[in-house]
Image (cartoon, rainbow, N blue to C red; front, side):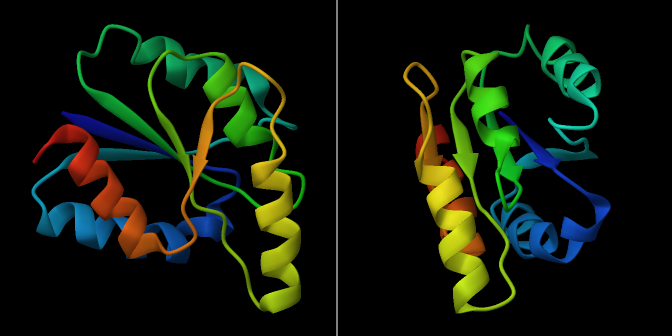
Length: 128
């Protein structure tokens, strides 16, 4: 059982911390990376390739604005992808949610706004 968190930027760390604190509470193993699908697609693919043989894995993506990261991860992996976009205010939240919800076909991204609920969703996916 493992969670791989991929942030679009290191500036997303405070948002990620809200998730990882809960994952620690649930005793769920996690690792974290910063890699932009727009700027570093090969780095994202390397992260996916390094985890391809895992048995139980969930990806959490933390990216805002156009959020290519969540779709990129979902399209290039067979594991569940949970998007938990960060936002600074209501206007920013609306932009980030819409970019996360509008995924092309065959890119199943589940969107969870609240970081605590994101961690809880992972716990339930794993049946922990």
